[in-house]
Image: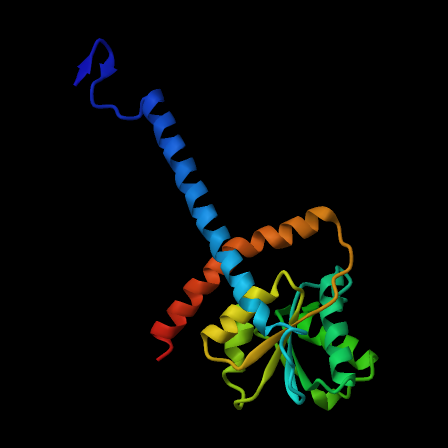
Length: 217
């Protein structure tokens, strides 16, 4: 019904739109606060599985997570830190082998191969390096460990990433502990981004675990 040129049943008035926008903002705030609280819980829980608070048994297999390549195809700084940590652990006898897990989108974007070349340059025998070319996500990398014979795994990545991958590994029944690779001073905005993105990513990890538990058969 239109009265004096105004649709009586038009709910999309300026006032209603403002109410809806305010409601949506409030919902987003509540969701983000919930995800942030979950992230804090996971961080606190994961500390008991991290080196050096957790004793890393010898003869573990190290899993190194991908973290992107530079334009020239070499590992990014974050990825180099992870591979450096893995090679150090190998030479210390903490791990006996390592799995390089990452994306393999093309011949010129092959994370596992770039990681392998860095490890070879640091005197890790080729036979001790295994490649997982389908580790496009941290969840994928962890799930692929289920195809390995039961053993102890050491998840190697930076401290901001460890809580989430430990949650995934434990959630799908993998015997794993975590090792935090040394983290150099990066650009402040990059540091902020890595920590902020882990908030929704950790929430998604929980959804992935539940979905995997339901549909794995």
